[in-house]
Amino acid sequence: MAPFNLAPLAGSFGYFAIFLLLGFAFGVVLELSGFGDSRRLAAQFYLRDMTVLKVMFTGIAVAAVLIHLASAFQLLDMSRVWINPTYLVPGIVGGLIMGVGFIVGGFCPGTSLVAAATLKLDGVMFVLGGLFGALMFGETVAGFDAWWHSSSMGRFTISDWLGIPTGVAVLLVVLMAIGAFVAGELAEKRFGGSLTSADTDPARETSLSVGRPSLAGVRGLLMAGSVAALAVVVVLKGQPSVADRWHWIAPRADSLVTGRAIFVDPAEIVALRRDLTLSVHILEVRSEADYNLFHLAGSKRISLADTQDPRVVRELLAASDNTILFLASNGEQAATEAWRRLEAQGVFNVYVAEGGINHWLDVYPPFPGVAERVASPAGGGSEDALAWRFGIAVGERCASSHPDIARQEPLPDAGFAASGAPGATAWFDGTNALPRPFTKRVKLQRKVTAKGGCG
Amino acid sequence: MPSPSRRAAAYINPYLGGALLGVVLFLSFYVTGNGLGASAAINRVQVGILSVFDHAHVDRIAYMSDLGGGDRRPLVDPSVYMLLGTLLGGLVSGLLNGRVRAETRRGPRVSVAARWALAFVGGALMMYGARMARGCTSGQALSGGAVLSVGSFAFMFAIFASAYLLALPLRRLWN
Image (cartoon, rainbow over all chains, first blue to last red; front, side, top):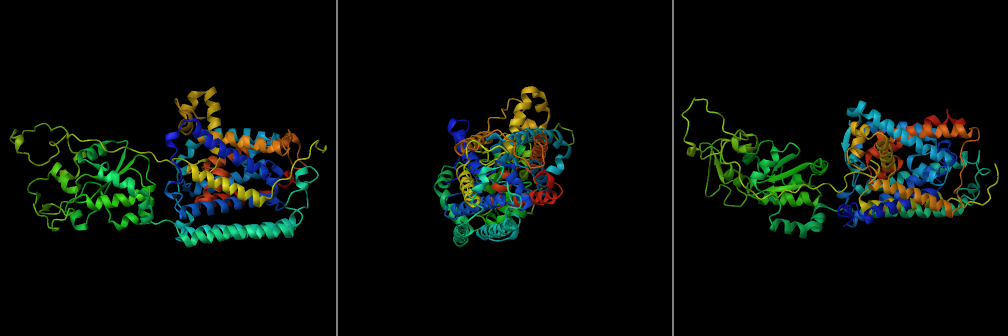
Protein backbone atom coordinates (compact mmCIF):
# COMPACT_ATOMS: atom_id res chain seq x y z
CA MET A 1 0.00 0.00 0.00
CA ALA A 2 1.10 3.53 -0.74
CA PRO A 3 3.10 5.47 0.23
CA PHE A 4 5.78 3.13 -1.01
CA ASN A 5 8.73 2.31 1.15
CA LEU A 6 11.47 3.97 -0.85
CA ALA A 7 14.15 3.30 1.76
CA PRO A 8 15.52 0.18 0.00
CA LEU A 9 15.92 2.29 -3.15
CA ALA A 10 17.81 5.04 -1.33
CA GLY A 11 20.85 6.29 -3.17
CA SER A 12 20.00 4.52 -6.41
CA PHE A 13 19.31 6.23 -9.70
CA GLY A 14 15.62 5.30 -9.59
CA TYR A 15 15.20 6.85 -6.16
CA PHE A 16 16.47 10.21 -7.29
CA ALA A 17 14.65 9.94 -10.62
CA ILE A 18 11.34 9.81 -8.73
CA PHE A 19 12.07 13.12 -7.01
CA LEU A 20 13.48 14.62 -10.19
CA LEU A 21 10.25 13.76 -12.02
CA LEU A 22 8.03 15.12 -9.25
CA GLY A 23 10.07 18.32 -9.20
CA PHE A 24 9.85 18.50 -12.97
CA ALA A 25 6.06 18.31 -12.92
CA PHE A 26 6.00 20.88 -10.11
CA GLY A 27 8.18 23.27 -12.14
CA VAL A 28 6.07 22.83 -15.27
CA VAL A 29 2.83 23.56 -13.41
CA LEU A 30 4.26 26.64 -11.68
CA GLU A 31 5.60 27.97 -14.98
CA LEU A 32 2.36 27.29 -16.87
CA SER A 33 0.42 29.14 -14.17
CA GLY A 34 2.54 32.24 -14.62
CA PHE A 35 4.42 31.99 -11.32
CA GLY A 36 7.68 32.95 -13.02
CA ASP A 37 6.48 36.55 -13.22
CA SER A 38 7.03 38.57 -10.05
CA ARG A 39 4.48 41.22 -11.10
CA ARG A 40 1.80 38.62 -11.42
CA LEU A 41 2.61 37.31 -7.94
CA ALA A 42 2.73 40.80 -6.44
CA ALA A 43 -0.52 41.81 -8.13
CA GLN A 44 -2.17 39.36 -5.74
CA PHE A 45 -1.58 41.81 -2.91
CA TYR A 46 -3.16 44.69 -4.82
CA LEU A 47 -6.24 42.58 -5.53
CA ARG A 48 -5.74 42.98 -9.27
CA ASP A 49 -4.86 39.44 -10.20
CA MET A 50 -5.72 36.69 -7.75
CA THR A 51 -3.78 33.95 -9.58
CA VAL A 52 -1.70 33.05 -6.52
CA LEU A 53 -4.76 32.53 -4.35
CA LYS A 54 -6.59 30.60 -7.04
CA VAL A 55 -3.71 28.27 -7.90
CA MET A 56 -2.69 27.66 -4.30
CA PHE A 57 -6.13 27.05 -2.87
CA THR A 58 -7.20 24.93 -5.83
CA GLY A 59 -4.01 22.93 -5.41
CA ILE A 60 -4.59 22.41 -1.69
CA ALA A 61 -8.27 21.54 -2.13
CA VAL A 62 -7.70 19.10 -4.99
CA ALA A 63 -4.73 17.43 -3.30
CA ALA A 64 -6.57 17.22 0.06
CA VAL A 65 -9.56 15.56 -1.61
CA LEU A 66 -7.42 13.11 -3.62
CA ILE A 67 -5.22 12.21 -0.64
CA HIS A 68 -8.11 11.55 1.70
CA LEU A 69 -10.12 9.83 -1.01
CA ALA A 70 -7.18 7.46 -1.54
CA SER A 71 -7.01 6.96 2.22
CA ALA A 72 -10.77 6.35 2.49
CA PHE A 73 -10.57 3.65 -0.19
CA GLN A 74 -7.58 2.11 1.60
CA LEU A 75 -5.10 2.90 -1.15
CA LEU A 76 -2.96 5.23 0.96
CA ASP A 77 -1.82 4.68 4.54
CA MET A 78 -2.08 8.10 6.20
CA SER A 79 -0.10 6.98 9.25
CA ARG A 80 2.96 6.81 7.01
CA VAL A 81 2.31 10.14 5.30
CA TRP A 82 4.38 13.05 6.57
CA ILE A 83 2.18 15.72 8.11
CA ASN A 84 4.15 18.86 8.88
CA PRO A 85 4.38 19.04 12.66
CA THR A 86 2.96 22.21 14.15
CA TYR A 87 5.31 24.63 15.89
CA LEU A 88 2.69 27.33 16.15
CA VAL A 89 4.58 30.46 17.20
CA PRO A 90 7.78 30.01 15.13
CA GLY A 91 5.54 29.07 12.18
CA ILE A 92 3.48 32.24 12.48
CA VAL A 93 6.49 34.53 13.01
CA GLY A 94 8.30 32.84 10.11
CA GLY A 95 5.18 33.37 8.00
CA LEU A 96 5.05 37.07 8.92
CA ILE A 97 8.69 37.50 7.89
CA MET A 98 7.99 35.62 4.66
CA GLY A 99 5.08 37.95 3.91
CA VAL A 100 7.52 40.87 4.03
CA GLY A 101 9.90 38.99 1.75
CA PHE A 102 7.02 38.22 -0.62
CA ILE A 103 5.91 41.83 -1.12
CA VAL A 104 9.50 43.15 -1.27
CA GLY A 105 10.98 40.39 -3.41
CA GLY A 106 7.98 39.35 -5.45
CA PHE A 107 8.50 35.60 -5.20
CA CYS A 108 8.41 32.69 -2.83
CA PRO A 109 11.26 30.13 -2.90
CA GLY A 110 9.52 27.66 -5.25
CA THR A 111 8.37 30.27 -7.74
CA SER A 112 11.75 32.02 -7.75
CA LEU A 113 13.32 28.77 -9.02
CA VAL A 114 10.96 28.77 -11.98
CA ALA A 115 11.61 32.47 -12.62
CA ALA A 116 15.35 31.88 -12.53
CA ALA A 117 15.00 28.88 -14.85
CA THR A 118 13.26 31.07 -17.42
CA LEU A 119 16.07 33.64 -17.07
CA LYS A 120 14.10 36.26 -15.19
CA LEU A 121 17.03 38.13 -13.66
CA ASP A 122 15.00 39.30 -10.69
CA GLY A 123 14.29 35.62 -10.01
CA VAL A 124 18.02 34.86 -10.15
CA MET A 125 18.68 37.67 -7.67
CA PHE A 126 15.92 36.34 -5.44
CA VAL A 127 17.48 32.85 -5.40
CA LEU A 128 20.87 34.36 -4.52
CA GLY A 129 19.19 36.35 -1.76
CA GLY A 130 17.54 33.13 -0.61
CA LEU A 131 20.92 31.42 -0.28
CA PHE A 132 22.09 34.38 1.78
CA GLY A 133 18.95 34.21 3.95
CA ALA A 134 19.51 30.50 4.57
CA LEU A 135 23.08 31.26 5.60
CA MET A 136 21.88 33.96 7.98
CA PHE A 137 19.37 31.60 9.55
CA GLY A 138 22.04 28.97 10.09
CA GLU A 139 24.30 31.59 11.69
CA THR A 140 21.64 32.94 14.05
CA VAL A 141 19.37 30.02 14.95
CA ALA A 142 21.56 28.96 17.86
CA GLY A 143 20.62 32.24 19.56
CA PHE A 144 16.92 31.38 19.70
CA ASP A 145 16.98 27.62 19.52
CA ALA A 146 14.70 27.06 22.51
CA TRP A 147 12.08 29.44 21.11
CA TRP A 148 12.41 27.83 17.67
CA HIS A 149 11.38 24.52 19.22
CA SER A 150 8.63 26.05 21.36
CA SER A 151 4.85 25.64 21.00
CA SER A 152 5.41 22.21 19.49
CA MET A 153 2.12 20.43 18.95
CA GLY A 154 3.41 17.55 16.86
CA ARG A 155 1.23 16.02 14.21
CA PHE A 156 -1.86 18.13 14.65
CA THR A 157 -4.53 18.28 11.96
CA ILE A 158 -7.67 20.36 11.58
CA SER A 159 -9.78 17.34 12.46
CA ASP A 160 -7.77 16.83 15.69
CA TRP A 161 -8.13 20.51 16.49
CA LEU A 162 -11.88 20.81 15.90
CA GLY A 163 -12.66 17.25 16.93
CA ILE A 164 -14.43 16.51 13.65
CA PRO A 165 -14.05 13.56 11.25
CA THR A 166 -11.26 13.94 8.72
CA GLY A 167 -13.71 13.94 5.81
CA VAL A 168 -15.62 16.88 7.27
CA ALA A 169 -12.37 18.79 7.65
CA VAL A 170 -11.57 18.12 3.98
CA LEU A 171 -15.02 19.38 3.00
CA LEU A 172 -14.48 22.50 5.12
CA VAL A 173 -11.20 23.21 3.34
CA VAL A 174 -12.89 22.80 -0.05
CA LEU A 175 -15.73 25.12 0.95
CA MET A 176 -13.25 27.65 2.33
CA ALA A 177 -11.35 27.54 -0.97
CA ILE A 178 -14.54 28.07 -2.97
CA GLY A 179 -15.43 31.01 -0.71
CA ALA A 180 -11.97 32.48 -1.30
CA PHE A 181 -12.43 32.07 -5.08
CA VAL A 182 -15.73 33.93 -5.04
CA ALA A 183 -14.11 36.75 -3.05
CA GLY A 184 -11.11 36.70 -5.41
CA GLU A 185 -13.25 36.93 -8.53
CA LEU A 186 -15.18 39.86 -7.03
CA ALA A 187 -11.92 41.60 -6.13
CA GLU A 188 -10.55 41.11 -9.64
CA LYS A 189 -13.75 42.52 -11.11
CA ARG A 190 -13.46 45.59 -8.89
CA PHE A 191 -9.68 46.22 -8.89
CA GLY A 192 -8.41 44.21 -11.85
CA GLY A 193 -7.31 45.97 -15.01
CA SER A 194 -6.78 49.33 -13.33
CA LEU A 195 -3.15 48.87 -14.15
CA THR A 196 -2.98 46.09 -16.66
CA SER A 197 0.45 44.83 -17.51
CA ALA A 198 -0.70 43.80 -20.97
CA ASP A 199 1.62 46.39 -22.52
CA THR A 200 4.69 44.79 -21.02
CA ASP A 201 3.68 41.18 -20.99
CA PRO A 202 2.30 39.61 -24.14
CA ALA A 203 1.08 36.65 -22.16
CA ARG A 204 -1.42 38.75 -20.26
CA GLU A 205 -3.37 39.69 -23.38
CA THR A 206 -4.68 36.24 -23.93
CA SER A 207 -4.96 35.25 -20.29
CA LEU A 208 -8.13 33.38 -19.63
CA SER A 209 -8.89 35.42 -16.56
CA VAL A 210 -10.09 38.24 -18.81
CA GLY A 211 -12.80 37.84 -21.38
CA ARG A 212 -15.76 35.49 -21.68
CA PRO A 213 -16.56 35.32 -18.00
CA SER A 214 -19.78 33.40 -18.60
CA LEU A 215 -18.13 30.33 -20.10
CA ALA A 216 -15.29 30.41 -17.58
CA GLY A 217 -17.90 30.81 -14.86
CA VAL A 218 -19.80 27.73 -15.93
CA ARG A 219 -16.64 25.67 -16.15
CA GLY A 220 -15.47 26.95 -12.79
CA LEU A 221 -18.79 26.06 -11.23
CA LEU A 222 -18.61 22.55 -12.67
CA MET A 223 -15.09 22.06 -11.38
CA ALA A 224 -15.82 23.44 -7.92
CA GLY A 225 -18.94 21.28 -7.80
CA SER A 226 -17.10 18.09 -8.70
CA VAL A 227 -14.31 18.69 -6.17
CA ALA A 228 -16.90 19.40 -3.49
CA ALA A 229 -18.80 16.25 -4.50
CA LEU A 230 -15.64 14.18 -4.11
CA ALA A 231 -15.14 15.77 -0.70
CA VAL A 232 -18.65 14.62 0.23
CA VAL A 233 -17.68 11.10 -0.86
CA VAL A 234 -14.71 11.34 1.54
CA VAL A 235 -17.10 12.35 4.32
CA LEU A 236 -19.56 9.54 3.59
CA LYS A 237 -16.92 6.86 3.11
CA GLY A 238 -15.01 7.75 6.28
CA GLN A 239 -11.38 7.03 7.02
CA PRO A 240 -10.23 3.44 7.64
CA SER A 241 -10.83 2.17 11.16
CA VAL A 242 -8.30 0.30 13.25
CA ALA A 243 -10.07 -2.93 12.28
CA ASP A 244 -9.58 -2.11 8.58
CA ARG A 245 -5.91 -1.37 9.16
CA TRP A 246 -5.73 -4.63 11.03
CA HIS A 247 -6.66 -6.53 7.88
CA TRP A 248 -3.92 -4.77 5.93
CA ILE A 249 -1.24 -6.00 8.28
CA ALA A 250 -2.75 -9.35 9.28
CA PRO A 251 -0.54 -11.66 7.16
CA ARG A 252 2.70 -9.95 8.17
CA ALA A 253 1.62 -9.62 11.80
CA ASP A 254 0.67 -13.29 12.03
CA SER A 255 4.02 -14.41 10.71
CA LEU A 256 5.83 -12.13 13.18
CA VAL A 257 3.79 -13.51 16.08
CA THR A 258 4.14 -17.18 15.14
CA GLY A 259 7.82 -16.65 14.33
CA ARG A 260 8.24 -15.14 17.82
CA ALA A 261 10.09 -12.21 16.23
CA ILE A 262 8.32 -9.65 18.41
CA PHE A 263 8.87 -11.38 21.75
CA VAL A 264 11.86 -10.00 23.59
CA ASP A 265 13.71 -11.69 26.43
CA PRO A 266 13.64 -9.77 29.75
CA ALA A 267 17.43 -9.60 29.70
CA GLU A 268 17.37 -7.82 26.34
CA ILE A 269 14.86 -5.30 27.69
CA VAL A 270 17.12 -4.72 30.68
CA ALA A 271 20.14 -4.27 28.41
CA LEU A 272 18.23 -1.78 26.22
CA ARG A 273 17.02 0.14 29.26
CA ARG A 274 20.66 0.66 30.15
CA ASP A 275 21.43 2.12 26.72
CA LEU A 276 21.43 5.88 27.15
CA THR A 277 21.06 6.51 23.42
CA LEU A 278 17.65 4.83 23.41
CA SER A 279 14.34 5.88 24.84
CA VAL A 280 12.75 2.69 26.15
CA HIS A 281 9.12 2.76 27.26
CA ILE A 282 7.16 -0.04 28.86
CA LEU A 283 3.38 -0.17 28.72
CA GLU A 284 1.73 -2.80 30.88
CA VAL A 285 -1.58 -4.15 29.63
CA ARG A 286 -2.72 -5.39 33.05
CA SER A 287 -5.45 -4.80 35.57
CA GLU A 288 -4.93 -2.03 38.08
CA ALA A 289 -4.88 -4.56 40.96
CA ASP A 290 -2.13 -6.65 39.37
CA TYR A 291 -0.23 -3.51 38.43
CA ASN A 292 -0.29 -2.28 42.02
CA LEU A 293 1.00 -5.60 43.29
CA PHE A 294 4.03 -5.42 41.06
CA HIS A 295 5.13 -3.56 37.96
CA LEU A 296 8.31 -2.69 36.12
CA ALA A 297 9.99 0.54 37.14
CA GLY A 298 8.90 3.51 35.05
CA SER A 299 6.20 1.59 33.21
CA LYS A 300 2.74 2.91 32.54
CA ARG A 301 -0.48 0.95 32.66
CA ILE A 302 -2.82 1.01 29.70
CA SER A 303 -5.94 -0.89 28.83
CA LEU A 304 -6.62 -2.54 25.51
CA ALA A 305 -9.17 0.20 24.80
CA ASP A 306 -6.46 2.82 25.26
CA THR A 307 -4.55 1.37 22.33
CA GLN A 308 -7.29 2.71 20.07
CA ASP A 309 -7.62 6.08 21.76
CA PRO A 310 -6.51 8.66 19.16
CA ARG A 311 -4.80 10.79 21.80
CA VAL A 312 -2.73 7.89 23.10
CA VAL A 313 -1.84 6.71 19.61
CA ARG A 314 -0.92 10.20 18.43
CA GLU A 315 1.53 10.51 21.31
CA LEU A 316 3.07 7.15 20.45
CA LEU A 317 3.28 8.07 16.75
CA ALA A 318 5.05 11.30 17.62
CA ALA A 319 7.73 9.48 19.60
CA SER A 320 11.32 10.08 18.59
CA ASP A 321 13.15 7.74 16.23
CA ASN A 322 15.14 6.16 19.06
CA THR A 323 12.04 5.08 20.98
CA ILE A 324 11.41 1.40 21.63
CA LEU A 325 8.09 0.43 23.12
CA PHE A 326 7.62 -2.78 25.10
CA LEU A 327 4.22 -4.17 25.92
CA ALA A 328 3.84 -6.47 28.90
CA SER A 329 0.88 -8.36 30.26
CA ASN A 330 0.89 -11.08 32.92
CA GLY A 331 1.29 -13.66 30.18
CA GLU A 332 1.60 -12.75 26.52
CA GLN A 333 -2.01 -12.66 25.39
CA ALA A 334 -3.16 -9.10 26.11
CA ALA A 335 0.20 -7.61 25.18
CA THR A 336 0.18 -9.41 21.82
CA GLU A 337 -3.31 -8.11 21.16
CA ALA A 338 -2.20 -4.58 22.02
CA TRP A 339 0.83 -5.06 19.75
CA ARG A 340 -1.44 -5.90 16.81
CA ARG A 341 -3.51 -2.79 17.38
CA LEU A 342 -0.54 -0.44 17.67
CA GLU A 343 1.15 -2.08 14.70
CA ALA A 344 -2.04 -1.58 12.69
CA GLN A 345 -1.95 2.11 13.51
CA GLY A 346 1.59 2.49 12.27
CA VAL A 347 3.42 2.83 15.59
CA PHE A 348 7.08 2.01 15.15
CA ASN A 349 9.41 -0.25 17.13
CA VAL A 350 6.83 -2.02 19.28
CA TYR A 351 7.71 -5.32 20.96
CA VAL A 352 6.23 -7.68 23.54
CA ALA A 353 7.97 -8.82 26.72
CA GLU A 354 8.49 -12.55 26.27
CA GLY A 355 6.47 -14.56 28.74
CA GLY A 356 5.09 -11.37 30.27
CA ILE A 357 5.45 -10.36 33.89
CA ASN A 358 5.21 -13.99 35.04
CA HIS A 359 8.33 -14.91 33.09
CA TRP A 360 10.02 -11.65 34.11
CA LEU A 361 9.66 -12.66 37.75
CA ASP A 362 11.05 -16.11 36.92
CA VAL A 363 14.14 -14.45 35.50
CA TYR A 364 14.45 -11.82 38.21
CA PRO A 365 12.75 -13.51 41.19
CA PRO A 366 11.59 -11.37 44.07
CA PHE A 367 12.61 -11.98 47.66
CA PRO A 368 10.77 -15.14 48.82
CA GLY A 369 9.15 -13.22 51.64
CA VAL A 370 7.56 -10.85 49.15
CA ALA A 371 6.04 -13.19 46.59
CA GLU A 372 5.92 -16.78 45.52
CA ARG A 373 5.15 -18.62 42.31
CA VAL A 374 1.78 -20.39 42.49
CA ALA A 375 0.86 -23.41 40.46
CA SER A 376 -2.76 -22.47 39.82
CA PRO A 377 -3.17 -18.70 39.54
CA ALA A 378 -6.16 -16.91 41.01
CA GLY A 379 -7.30 -15.91 37.52
CA GLY A 380 -8.53 -19.43 36.87
CA GLY A 381 -5.60 -20.77 34.87
CA SER A 382 -5.95 -18.41 31.95
CA GLU A 383 -2.68 -17.71 30.19
CA ASP A 384 -2.90 -14.06 31.16
CA ALA A 385 -3.40 -14.50 34.92
CA LEU A 386 -0.72 -13.40 37.37
CA ALA A 387 1.11 -16.56 38.39
CA TRP A 388 2.71 -14.95 41.43
CA ARG A 389 1.14 -14.34 44.78
CA PHE A 390 2.29 -11.19 46.57
CA GLY A 391 2.00 -10.77 50.32
CA ILE A 392 1.81 -7.02 49.97
CA ALA A 393 1.58 -4.70 46.99
CA VAL A 394 5.16 -3.68 46.25
CA GLY A 395 4.57 -1.74 43.04
CA GLU A 396 8.09 -1.03 41.85
CA ARG A 397 9.76 -1.04 45.29
CA CYS A 398 11.46 -4.31 44.53
CA ALA A 399 14.77 -5.08 42.87
CA SER A 400 12.94 -7.20 40.27
CA SER A 401 11.25 -4.03 39.00
CA HIS A 402 14.46 -2.36 37.97
CA PRO A 403 17.21 -4.89 37.28
CA ASP A 404 18.72 -2.36 34.88
CA ILE A 405 19.68 0.09 37.61
CA ALA A 406 20.66 -2.57 40.10
CA ARG A 407 24.29 -3.06 40.94
CA GLN A 408 26.14 -5.18 38.48
CA GLU A 409 29.15 -5.70 40.69
CA PRO A 410 28.74 -6.98 44.25
CA LEU A 411 29.36 -4.09 46.62
CA PRO A 412 32.48 -4.41 48.75
CA ASP A 413 31.82 -6.18 51.97
CA ALA A 414 31.54 -3.59 54.69
CA GLY A 415 31.84 -6.24 57.37
CA PHE A 416 28.41 -5.63 58.90
CA ALA A 417 27.15 -9.10 58.09
CA ALA A 418 28.77 -12.48 57.84
CA SER A 419 30.25 -12.74 54.39
CA GLY A 420 29.91 -15.72 52.14
CA ALA A 421 26.97 -18.03 51.57
CA PRO A 422 26.29 -16.76 48.02
CA GLY A 423 24.32 -19.90 47.27
CA ALA A 424 21.60 -18.70 49.59
CA THR A 425 20.57 -15.89 47.27
CA ALA A 426 17.73 -17.61 45.47
CA TRP A 427 16.11 -14.29 44.77
CA PHE A 428 17.28 -11.46 42.59
CA ASP A 429 18.95 -8.74 44.64
CA GLY A 430 20.74 -6.86 41.92
CA THR A 431 23.93 -8.86 42.10
CA ASN A 432 22.93 -12.22 40.69
CA ALA A 433 21.17 -13.52 37.61
CA LEU A 434 23.21 -11.25 35.37
CA PRO A 435 24.30 -11.46 32.67
CA ARG A 436 21.85 -13.77 31.05
CA PRO A 437 22.24 -15.00 27.49
CA PHE A 438 19.44 -14.06 25.10
CA THR A 439 18.67 -13.93 21.38
CA LYS A 440 18.52 -10.35 20.17
CA ARG A 441 15.12 -9.62 18.72
CA VAL A 442 14.89 -5.81 18.69
CA LYS A 443 15.78 -4.19 15.39
CA LEU A 444 15.47 -0.44 15.64
CA GLN A 445 13.59 0.83 12.59
CA ARG A 446 13.76 4.38 11.31
CA LYS A 447 10.54 6.04 10.32
CA VAL A 448 10.18 6.08 6.55
CA THR A 449 8.78 9.58 6.43
CA ALA A 450 11.48 11.19 8.49
CA LYS A 451 11.30 14.68 7.02
CA GLY A 452 9.09 16.68 4.73
CA GLY A 453 10.19 17.94 1.37
CA CYS A 454 10.57 21.40 2.75
CA GLY A 455 11.18 20.98 6.43
CA MET B 1 9.10 48.33 -23.92
CA PRO B 2 10.42 46.70 -27.10
CA SER B 3 8.01 44.26 -28.60
CA PRO B 4 9.20 40.67 -28.24
CA SER B 5 10.41 38.94 -31.36
CA ARG B 6 8.23 35.94 -30.62
CA ARG B 7 4.81 35.82 -29.06
CA ALA B 8 4.70 33.98 -25.78
CA ALA B 9 1.84 31.57 -25.19
CA ALA B 10 -0.85 32.49 -22.71
CA TYR B 11 -0.63 31.28 -19.15
CA ILE B 12 -3.17 28.60 -18.38
CA ASN B 13 -6.31 29.24 -16.42
CA PRO B 14 -5.34 29.52 -12.73
CA TYR B 15 -7.97 26.98 -11.65
CA LEU B 16 -6.65 24.50 -14.20
CA GLY B 17 -3.11 25.26 -13.02
CA GLY B 18 -4.24 24.73 -9.43
CA ALA B 19 -5.93 21.44 -10.28
CA LEU B 20 -2.76 20.20 -12.01
CA LEU B 21 -0.74 21.34 -9.02
CA GLY B 22 -3.13 19.40 -6.77
CA VAL B 23 -2.64 16.24 -8.84
CA VAL B 24 1.17 16.60 -8.75
CA LEU B 25 1.04 17.19 -5.00
CA PHE B 26 -1.17 14.13 -4.54
CA LEU B 27 1.21 11.99 -6.61
CA SER B 28 4.09 13.19 -4.47
CA PHE B 29 2.27 12.15 -1.28
CA TYR B 30 1.06 8.92 -2.85
CA VAL B 31 4.47 7.76 -4.06
CA THR B 32 6.85 9.15 -1.44
CA GLY B 33 4.65 9.95 1.56
CA ASN B 34 5.94 13.50 1.39
CA GLY B 35 4.79 16.70 -0.24
CA LEU B 36 6.59 19.11 -2.56
CA GLY B 37 9.14 21.64 -1.43
CA ALA B 38 11.90 24.02 -2.33
CA SER B 39 13.37 25.73 0.72
CA ALA B 40 15.03 22.70 2.32
CA ALA B 41 16.90 22.08 -0.92
CA ILE B 42 17.95 25.75 -1.19
CA ASN B 43 19.24 25.42 2.36
CA ARG B 44 21.23 22.33 1.36
CA VAL B 45 22.72 24.11 -1.65
CA GLN B 46 23.75 26.96 0.65
CA VAL B 47 25.45 24.54 3.06
CA GLY B 48 27.05 22.75 0.11
CA ILE B 49 28.52 26.01 -1.21
CA LEU B 50 29.69 27.09 2.23
CA SER B 51 31.38 23.79 2.96
CA VAL B 52 33.50 24.15 -0.18
CA PHE B 53 34.95 27.37 1.23
CA ASP B 54 34.91 26.69 4.97
CA HIS B 55 33.98 23.16 5.88
CA ALA B 56 35.07 23.63 9.48
CA HIS B 57 32.50 26.40 9.86
CA VAL B 58 29.74 24.02 8.73
CA ASP B 59 30.98 21.52 11.29
CA ARG B 60 30.87 24.09 14.08
CA ILE B 61 27.27 25.22 13.59
CA ALA B 62 24.86 22.55 14.75
CA TYR B 63 22.09 23.54 12.33
CA MET B 64 24.37 23.39 9.28
CA SER B 65 26.28 20.37 10.52
CA ASP B 66 22.99 18.43 10.51
CA LEU B 67 22.90 18.94 6.75
CA GLY B 68 26.54 18.89 5.75
CA GLY B 69 28.83 18.33 8.74
CA GLY B 70 31.62 15.78 8.74
CA ASP B 71 31.40 13.46 5.77
CA ARG B 72 27.72 14.19 5.13
CA ARG B 73 27.04 15.26 1.59
CA PRO B 74 24.40 17.98 1.73
CA LEU B 75 23.52 17.70 -1.95
CA VAL B 76 22.84 13.96 -1.96
CA ASP B 77 19.26 14.28 -0.85
CA PRO B 78 15.88 13.79 -2.53
CA SER B 79 14.95 17.44 -1.96
CA VAL B 80 17.93 18.59 -4.04
CA TYR B 81 16.80 16.37 -6.90
CA MET B 82 13.34 17.84 -6.58
CA LEU B 83 14.92 21.30 -6.85
CA LEU B 84 16.80 20.27 -9.99
CA GLY B 85 13.56 18.90 -11.39
CA THR B 86 11.74 22.14 -10.60
CA LEU B 87 14.41 24.16 -12.43
CA LEU B 88 14.30 21.77 -15.39
CA GLY B 89 10.50 21.74 -15.50
CA GLY B 90 10.37 25.51 -15.40
CA LEU B 91 12.96 25.73 -18.16
CA VAL B 92 11.29 23.18 -20.45
CA SER B 93 7.85 24.72 -20.00
CA GLY B 94 9.30 28.17 -20.54
CA LEU B 95 11.08 27.05 -23.74
CA LEU B 96 7.97 25.35 -25.14
CA ASN B 97 5.90 28.43 -24.48
CA GLY B 98 8.43 30.98 -25.67
CA ARG B 99 8.89 32.53 -22.24
CA VAL B 100 12.61 32.01 -21.69
CA ARG B 101 14.10 35.46 -22.11
CA ALA B 102 16.75 37.25 -20.06
CA GLU B 103 14.79 40.13 -18.60
CA THR B 104 13.84 41.76 -15.33
CA ARG B 105 10.20 41.87 -14.37
CA ARG B 106 9.53 44.94 -12.24
CA GLY B 107 7.04 47.59 -11.29
CA PRO B 108 6.85 50.61 -13.64
CA ARG B 109 8.53 52.96 -11.16
CA VAL B 110 11.41 50.72 -10.11
CA SER B 111 14.77 50.70 -11.89
CA VAL B 112 16.39 47.43 -12.86
CA ALA B 113 19.15 47.86 -10.28
CA ALA B 114 16.62 48.62 -7.55
CA ARG B 115 14.54 45.62 -8.54
CA TRP B 116 17.57 43.36 -8.29
CA ALA B 117 18.44 44.73 -4.87
CA LEU B 118 14.85 44.35 -3.69
CA ALA B 119 14.68 40.81 -5.05
CA PHE B 120 17.87 39.94 -3.18
CA VAL B 121 16.59 41.43 0.08
CA GLY B 122 13.18 39.81 -0.40
CA GLY B 123 14.79 36.46 -1.13
CA ALA B 124 16.91 36.69 2.00
CA LEU B 125 13.88 37.55 4.16
CA MET B 126 11.82 34.85 2.50
CA MET B 127 14.33 32.10 3.13
CA TYR B 128 15.08 33.29 6.67
CA GLY B 129 11.36 33.11 7.44
CA ALA B 130 11.01 29.82 5.60
CA ARG B 131 13.67 28.15 7.71
CA MET B 132 12.13 29.58 10.86
CA ALA B 133 8.72 28.25 9.83
CA ARG B 134 10.25 24.90 8.80
CA GLY B 135 9.06 25.19 5.24
CA CYS B 136 8.16 27.60 2.52
CA THR B 137 4.99 28.32 0.63
CA SER B 138 5.36 24.95 -1.11
CA GLY B 139 6.64 22.69 1.63
CA GLN B 140 4.70 24.14 4.53
CA ALA B 141 1.60 25.96 3.21
CA LEU B 142 0.80 23.84 0.17
CA SER B 143 1.95 20.40 1.32
CA GLY B 144 0.94 20.83 4.96
CA GLY B 145 -2.37 22.37 3.92
CA ALA B 146 -3.22 19.37 1.75
CA VAL B 147 -2.81 17.04 4.73
CA LEU B 148 -4.73 19.45 6.97
CA SER B 149 -1.91 20.46 9.32
CA VAL B 150 -3.10 23.24 11.64
CA GLY B 151 0.34 24.87 11.74
CA SER B 152 0.44 25.05 7.95
CA PHE B 153 -2.83 26.95 7.78
CA ALA B 154 -1.75 29.35 10.53
CA PHE B 155 1.51 29.87 8.63
CA MET B 156 -0.32 30.50 5.36
CA PHE B 157 -2.56 33.13 6.91
CA ALA B 158 0.49 34.78 8.52
CA ILE B 159 2.17 35.16 5.10
CA PHE B 160 -0.90 36.65 3.50
CA ALA B 161 -1.59 38.90 6.50
CA SER B 162 1.83 40.52 6.55
CA ALA B 163 2.07 40.81 2.76
CA TYR B 164 -1.36 42.47 2.57
CA LEU B 165 -0.51 44.81 5.46
CA LEU B 166 2.67 45.97 3.72
CA ALA B 167 1.17 46.09 0.23
CA LEU B 168 -0.21 49.61 0.66
CA PRO B 169 2.92 51.28 2.12
CA LEU B 170 5.05 49.55 -0.52
CA ARG B 171 2.70 50.18 -3.44
CA ARG B 172 5.34 52.19 -5.32
CA LEU B 173 7.32 48.99 -5.79
CA TRP B 174 4.70 47.38 -7.97
CA ASN B 175 2.39 50.10 -9.29
